[in-house]
Image 1 (cartoon, one colour):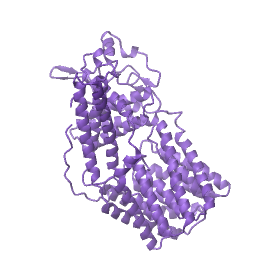
Image 2 (spheres, rainbow, N blue to C red):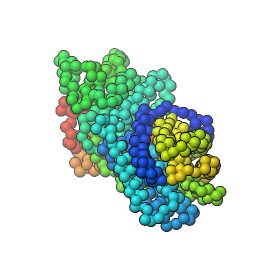
Image 3 (cartoon, helix red, strand yellow):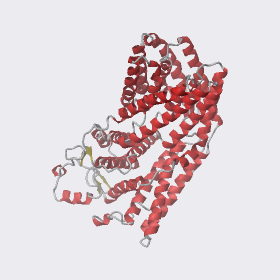
Image 4 (tube, helix red, strand yellow):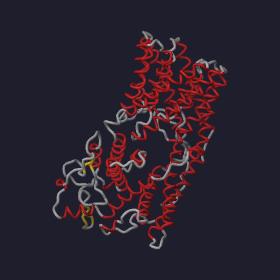
Length: 623
């Protein structure tokens, strides 16, 4: 693959109407919505029965951790949720101690801004996923302005920890019923996105949007599957083969069969058998048996949740389309595949395994490139809080949290988020004014209104951020009434002013603090992968290469692939005037996976394909 070429800068318009356009809801929108209700409800109702609803903000801090890691395999989700809970407790502890030691609002805003910067940088470096740092910043910033004493801090932290443990149980509850649910969903989304791109390509449109969405979905599927690390699983192995088939469809969309891809996506939903596209290690043997008259429906299906037949009814293994004739040669995509196709699929899987074995980069090295992001967050949040204080606000953390929520991948998206935040909050305060008479009927009514807002926020935010903010705003205002009812007019006025201040100051900070080096880091990482892959491929093709040289080349290539992903993910949280080359990153990873496989095979760590067919040892690994 050639090194990256510069992308010319172009003037970007700041959209308004487009930023408010509604999208399709997520396929699993109900999962975080139900999880947060299940996590928030029991602790809040228990405190209500004990007559201590004033302590509910602390339990809610732990309960909101149930919003995280819904896209992770359960083994990885358990760890991520535990770290999120610990991070929440750490930020909460700093906030509570600070609130106990001083009531100086300027000092408290400064502490909140520094916490927001740390939370933003750590969440980006660890790629924790949505809702990222926003929930953590909301919890720590809000508690900064709640009067405390040092003697109360341990009890309040204990309440948050207990609720966090309950949220962990809620997040892990589906595991016994659907142990591979996240992996199945991610693979199905990749197959559907590849099918959509294939349909676009067949129509001659070759839409950039469909192509980018497909590559992003395939990349997300690999991330989900790789998150399980080296845990053996026949089901996960079969899902990896399906993701490879999605990649094949992206490489040759005109030859793909969208209907078959969609049928695979439907088949892997739920807990049914997973269709298999064939095992490259045994394909030749299967072809010979098929030539001898053995039909696929005579082969016993696997019992580990994996069916070797695509639809469980003796159908063909491949999903790339009907038989065609090109230049007199039959291309039977529904029947036996060519040797090169089988080897490339196997290369992908073996290369993924080699990459999975590489340890992730230390957290410190991942935090370094995010320093400008942290500076921007600290500056924007601090200035927003100071301006809010200058205007006489009682709750400057609203402006601080608004500023913290704005920063996205580029200036256009940051502007869009500012528009969405402002519109959502303005509509949200109207909703709050409407539900306040109901919420003030009693403690039970207040808790039920809070639960309804939690559910609505998670159910709607996937369609557009502003729509979710319509429910987030009354939720935040209702939480302030847990210790006691507040004048509705003052709450509405303060929220509107702080929203406008936070959005304006936060956007100015985003413009003022730039990090154009992030784009150059991605280019350098792509170049490093290209060079390492070419070097490893040359060694794999050279019969005189020594085992030590092959091992060094393989480790170097695997390390550069891991570095490329980390660099690209870090750059995705930054903005500059050039688009992130996401498609090229995915293509570089694919090529590196195949070269890793060829190097592993050349080292003798895997039986050569020539033992069962006429494959060459360096197929698919040429520089």
